[in-house]
Amino acid sequence: MPITKREEDIIRQSFQPKSWNDVKTHDSWSVFKIMAEFVDGMEKMSKIGPCVAIFGSARTKPEDKYYRITEEIAAKLTKLGFGVLTGGGPGIMEAGNKGAKEAGGSSAGLSIVLPFEDKPNDYIDHDKNMRFNYFFVRKNIFMRYAQGYIVMPGGFGTLDELSEALTLIQTEKLCDFPVILVGKDYWQGLIDWFHNTLEKENMISSQDFDIFHVVDTADEAVKVIEDFYRRFSVKTNLEL
Image (cartoon, rainbow, N blue to C red; front, side, top):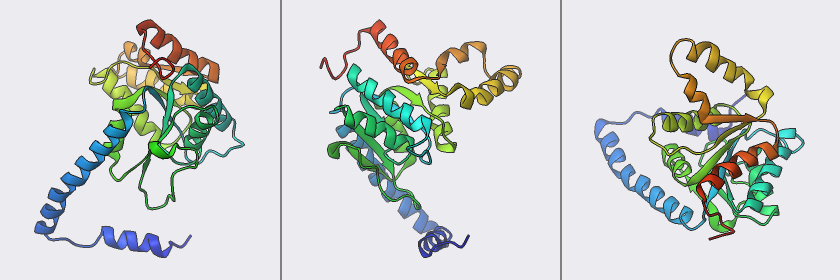
């Protein structure tokens, strides 16, 4: 499949040789762009209230069962008083924002500027639509402001977010919060690998399996969130 003119320009720019002074100057000025993204993201998120992040594939179609389950999860979270936070793109992210929006809840999107993606989905509240250039800034905002992770079926990006959450909770760099994998059939191969390879080779411990839950339905996913925060009497948007 031939590449487009835009793709060709991006590739050419990426491999354009730079002097060491160019690199140093670019890196120095990048600090201010990074700071600006942190400040903007933190200011906006601090006004939204408790949210649950939903991750999953951008390729999931509206007719897919996981798209529909995601909509249901988002709507149920809204009724509990949680906002919904996604990566702002299509597929599962769109389903999460759509479910929250149509249920009358807060619908936030932290989208990333990518070469081959057009724009954020249409179901994000206009004042909660944040656009990032840096993955690590975006991931930090997710970690700082999400009160739980709902992980739907997805690819490398979804695995990246899941792995970071598991690592930070495991190493106690992030407070323990619910991490819920939805779709037992989809995730079973990964869970088996955790047991049969990682645990067997002493790369993880049996206690690490307590960090996350694996469920099949929207009701099960939302119940994990509800039960967890009932224990700590955390106030939601309905109570603030």
